[in-house]
Length: 175
Image 1 (tube, one colour):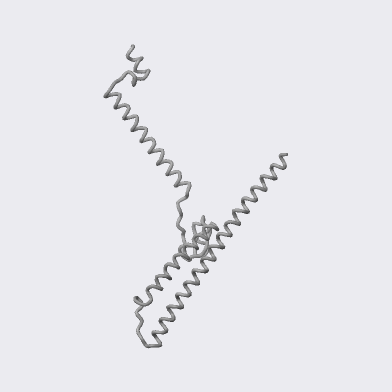
Image 2: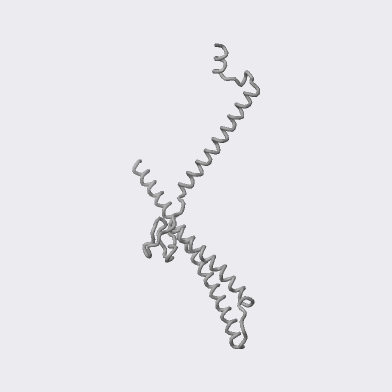
């Protein structure tokens, strides 16, 4: 029986790993399709800008970029930003990051780029952040407990009541 249990566990683990990888690949594929669509939209905007500029050239008219092309340029900026976000999501799925200097794709845990040698920004580790949050929470809890104890002590000093007196105090009074 133990043999079959081990086989079942191994098969279950293999399934989970495969499902996770398949899910990541599917998500990355969807992101890349969306990125391709956005790039197509940018190319359409480039074409539209080019047509407007050429029409002005043919008519020997001056073109005012701010008035006539600002809308298309703003759309291109927004689409480019969205593409950048998609690229970051794709890299996160592959546990990669982009070199700040040469923009090559490198492993997330690398401190230096293997292509250009540039030092990489070290992201805050989740464990460190969680530890700091736990310390802050415990300090807040301690402060709250200290405040409660101080309030109780103050109350006892102001209103000494036999119910609030502990066993040690009763023993001292008897002696």
